[in-house]
Amino acid sequence: MNKTAFMLAALLACGGAAAADRAAGEKLAAERCAACHGKDYNTPVDPSYPKLGGQYDDYLLKALRDYHSGARKNPVMGGIAKTLTPQDMRNLAAYLGSLPGPLTHKK
Image (cartoon, rainbow, N blue to C red; front, side):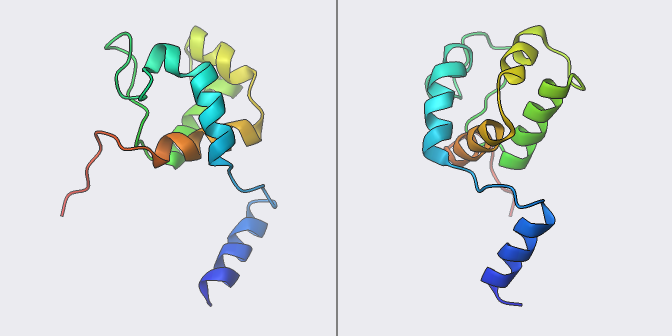
């Protein structure tokens, strides 16, 4: 199976979910994330806040979905996530995951 066919099959298997829009995610992140997680998303205002830049996008998406549903508890993040659409969450996760960050891959 070529790459295009594989991607199409994966998209259809996910219910035809729209692809993430990093530019839209960048705008949302500046509006809703930077105040606490820092302008680079790796220098949080409070050291207990996680670094988001460069985090795995699938992890970020799961975390946002869990905050949205209430499966993950945090009053601030729960309130923010409840205002996000599924597409907003995909966009944010794609943008933040594309940034440089502290994560490294072991060789």
